[in-house]
Image (tube, rainbow, N blue to C red; front, side, top):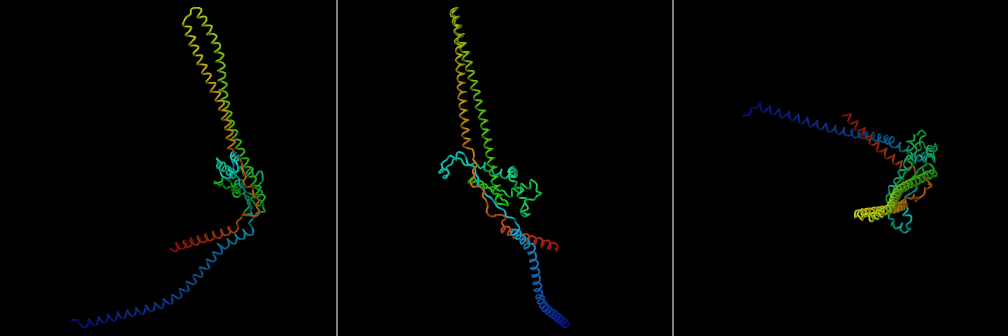
Length: 372
């Protein structure tokens, strides 16, 4: 049986729990109202943060993108010096191809194509220090590129070394090889149209001189080797002829001695030993004569073959010698092709955006790590 005191205590606990639940509900309601008010203030804070962030991005864009692009635009549109490009096309043609009919050249029936190594050697010579030195002696291109008439960013520095001048030359001269046609396109840039054309012509003249020197040197080497071959065969032929003449003179003397010995042997005793000796001696003479004749014949044929081979080598070398052919003469440009102003400005704009983005991300990562 439950006591009354227990019921009273249970009732009191229930009432206390009800009061606590009511107080909790009131607290939740008050928190909801507070949260609603806080939400309104947070929206204002977010709006202010967005304005601040937009302002910072605008300033960054102005300094890191707008200013470089504006400077590039001002430089390329108002200050950058015009550069003119002269273009020429050359190739090497074999002598045997030049003798073909025009229809064969059109149909492509030339049997031997141009060796690309020869054209590539010309290209390497165009871009070498030797070519730079020759053009410098002939046309004084350094003075042209160092003139104060051109802007400071485009011209060659007056305090530049020989290596710096050569690298500047490589920036102004280019050679493109077309493997399908075997042609070489030469491009030269200068601050004046006539100067660009003159440098291009000087390059072609020096290249043609190099090819002629190489061809002459090769012909001289072939003639020297051919002369050695012919002189060796001639010496062997003369030696064989001397041996043959000596043998003939000695054979005539030996024939006379054998005849006298046979007469004396027959008149004195009629011995069979003398007959055997004369027969053996005659056999040896016949073998020596036959050997000398074969050596002489071989030497004559070898001499004739060497002469024929030398003539054939000369003919082949002449047919296979390369001729310097100018397909397109150095052009005289009538308008400037460099600098490419719009392309350069767009390049500066693109790189400025990229640098700004990379810098912003890097700075944000550094701040985030600093907070941690």
